[in-house]
Image 1 (tube, one colour):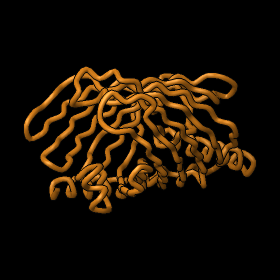
Image 2 (cartoon, one colour):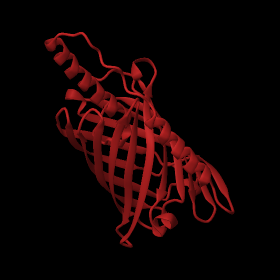
Image 3 (tube, one colour):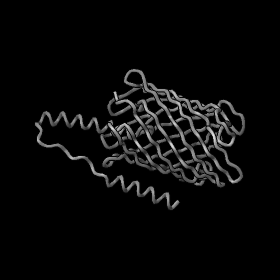
Image 4 (tube, rainbow, N blue to C red):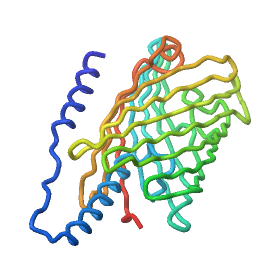
Amino acid sequence: MRVLQGKTEWLLCGALLLTSGVPIWGQSAGTASSATSQTQSDKRELLQEEVGDRDLTYLRTRAVFQYDYKEQVEDVTINRARLKLLYAFGPHQNMAVSVMVPVIWKSTATQSAFGSGDMEITAGWVVYARDTFRTGGLVQVAPQTSSENLIGGASTNLKEAWGLAWVLSSRFEFTGFFNYKQSVHVSRGGSIKEFEPDVTLNIRVGKSTLFVESDSHLDCITNQFAPLLKGGVSRAFGKKRAWVATVYVEGPLTEYARQTQEIVNTGIDVTWYPFEKK
């Protein structure tokens, strides 16, 4: 935990020390006004690119590679790699479909397993969109595709979610969603009925975007609440800033969350946008 905390502090401090761009002088009033408006629009778009998957309503074609390491109680560790492919279409890219395929290595005190986990198939849409505000929803199904019982395959789950994004300025974006997940077919174990509210504040500092995310899980069967807190940093890089890297650390806020969710979860996401924003 001390090593993880040290890495997190280093990442946050490093992002805060990054400098902003230098303004351009010597323009006419009209040209400067137009250039300023375009610059603000570009900065808002860059902020949204770095927010990426944290915004349920940001429907832009992309590929996302995700890796995370999770520690749970009773000496359980999970190494998980996921590949998500999202394709956006329709007027102004207001609809999207995606598929996510995980590969998992899970170890307990008595056994371990390696293989593919349960995939997720998602359809999403935006019902209202302006330059600074969007809202929309999604439906997701997670069929029993796991190759090993230890890492998945207990049930087929259905999730419905609704989210919003509010771009307060070129440096601040608020995102949030709530979803309800339930099992529609159970092969073993108990049923799942879970409500998850999630809110995130994204702040662009220098050349990176810092974020603080509150992700909570309400078990509707036991009526127990498990709050989690995540912090991290995202940064665009590469030609035309088509790539975004995100590192984060997440932990529980209560003992119940520690017992049922995780002791600690750290990870890195790499996003590739193959096409420019339309």
